[in-house]
Length: 531
Ligand code: COA
Image: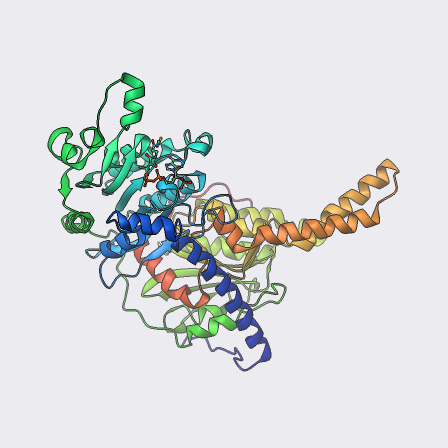
């Protein structure tokens, strides 16, 4: 029997402290998400509805199957920037006619649905998810195109959007555009580049240049309908494959298109799922806000994996990293989870072997982060910690099985890289609300700066300003703390969302199912490992 036996004391004061802290952090995330859901605010939503239009979220709700959940991605994009939280677009995974799809829906209530730099980043990420996981893409279009005041940040990189759209098609991944409203200039290439196009009669306006621009450019006086209405595109230009009588009809036609794709998943089918033996609710009490307190990641896994059943690999070797085989919602996975925070040479070597084994058996990997990084100090440098960390990073970089990352606690330094941080292309990456990620902890970072400044003053022979140093350290600590929290990182689209710890199993299960839309295979080879 390999079922993990939990020793989590749910009656301990510590458990209650953690639970309270996590619930408070979740309440904050909920409040931020509510800002995204509110879109452009009451007035803009009322104006939109007054035109007989549905909101982006209502369109999605109608589009996906009645019993399908919607895994919204990057809901807090643009948090902490000058732009509205959510970045004027809603993206996520939903099931349409039994087919898992990526949905990208402009929010026309936020600055006319115009794309700012964060909209672009969020949309490109959704399209990357469609490409990597072989998921059909459905665009719900109504946008004023480029956010004109910030055009310098989106015009040139924004070309990737249309390039990626047609590359999806070339890769055999269907793309469907349902056009509800404006799709001007560059925006016109979303329907232009999609395999299937539906336009709402009286709503869709798809043109390279609207009436004012055409008049400026050529002197021609033309109205919107003749330049880009659905009736014209359906009968004359041929850009519209279907003309819908209204928004609900457009969604209905979109669903019929997906139903007729004959889509088959190419990945392995899951076994029957078995629920964990321990309550997911208890995940609220495992990790608190004090990330210097270690926790046993097996207590997390016992509430995430099927039947709480873990086959540990090398349990006695490199104990600061747990490596184990398990299933989540019936999908086979290998798990790498930090136990004591620091990664030593043994842990790095163990991880390297485990990643190779996963590639040999085409098993997706799940990385659960709680690491302060690789061990420093003379003993460890002499023992080859750089070589061993590099081996692990090599294995992660060149691994070809799908990776999923969840930041449970700390994710600092090169440990973030070795554990498949954002730059290592995990198929999905989520964070718990009390996680933190940065080059190092705030106090350590401020301390390093202080030591460097002290040494510089000494070598110049100038007196060291102790008071100024204390103020600098406090300011730097506050800055790094603010930049390490999940909503800041989510704002920059460095993760795919902050999740409620209790949803970890559900979210990972949905991602593993989506991943199985594509083939799952390991790498045929690695680069040079330095032993
Ligand atoms: N960039 C920046 N802001 C934009 C924008 C854009 N491309 N398009 C619209 N907005 C802003 C408007 O200035 C307005 O801001 P305000 O609320 O502060 O006044 C808000 O979004 C709503 O626009 P509005 O025109 O009142 O809404 P609408 O629903 O009646 O019309 C559009 C929406 C998109 C049809 C219309 O705004 C439009 O034609 N925009 C320009 C489209 C264009 O030519 N884009 C070029 C792309 S390369």
